[in-house]
Length: 287
Image (cartoon, rainbow, N blue to C red; front, side, top):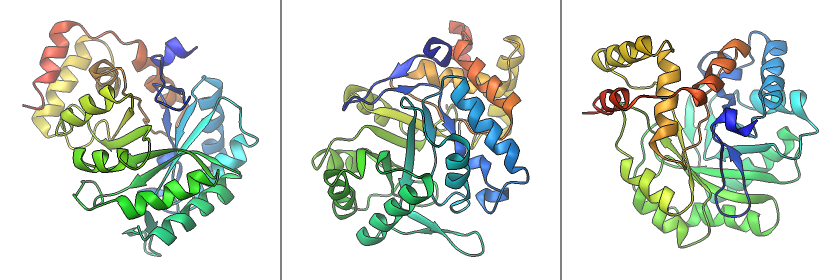
């Protein structure tokens, strides 16, 4: 089954994730706020994820907020032993749906407890510390914030630690404090600014988890991707995901969808073979 999902990544600490995972963000309402239009469909998608053999679900208590984690609990609790739920802390939502960066150490701890309660867990498999702005890293120190999560790991409430929207320097700072098993940053065919971070995480046996696999493409880049996809009789999304899987063996994907049909298309991307000439054409998109 895992071969159909691109195999697995196994960062330090005994964690094993299918390379094709699932991002639960789209299970909330519009703009990741409020309940979904069809809660039963959201539950069905999550159950289809597990039935497909996916062992990596990405979520956060600020999706909804709370809504997505509650749907995950409704659909999947008690959780299969091989399923790993990866969550993140570092933000909250305003009553108007705004994104509020919230990284005071005590609030980070409170967010961990919120995730535990809403997911129905006694310990979280992986908690990513979300840094940076809404979608770009900055160079703020992280020792105090990361240390708060290390404290909860030492108390058994978190098994593994990760980072999101971080720079190479911030990864170095975190690694000097405690092991890191995942890094989750904006990265795709058109956004290659983190090439060095992909290489560094691979060297450190850290899973690199790109988000927005089709985000930030200009019209010309989208046209190139569409042409390659048409030749391969695949969708642009499938080609973009297949390129990421080929980019580095430590990359694990979390494409999101609220559609069972779209879920099957995303899984099929793992079996898509990209000819060398297609890879060369796709590599040129970022240039």
